[in-house]
Length: 77
Image (cartoon, rainbow, N blue to C red; front, top):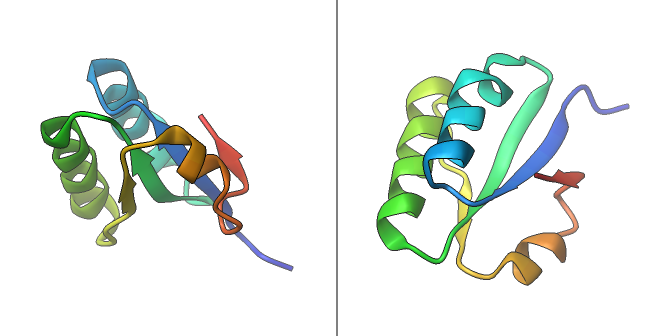
């Protein structure tokens, strides 16, 4: 049995990054495996937050349909 829930986050603007940094990445049983945004700067910000807090770089995508289709993602938010 796996000990972590793999999450993909759509939207790396203020709300998405704030939610990820303030809540999601503070939960030890959740792993952010992918972030998605159409804006390159927002994507880079989301990656840097995840990397700073967890030491791992999540996959980046620009189309949420691609994120939803990832088999390693258990839930999208």
